[in-house]
Image (cartoon, rainbow, N blue to C red; front, top):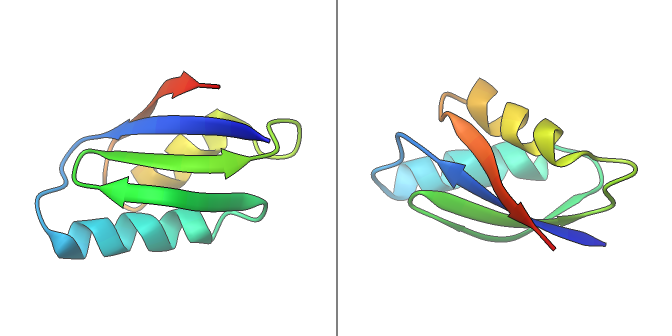
Length: 71
């Protein structure tokens, strides 16, 4: 499993955190570890779910996201 951290713009409240968590939980094969204002950490199989797909799911929810790092 790969752990990816996303940097997320536009989050300012608990509703934003819930919306981002829901968007990430909707990505098959992704396991959300943490979501807080401005970032999220997700475990996933990088061969099945590329990190960029996670960022796209969050961006499509209305919060511009980019991959900050992987390990």
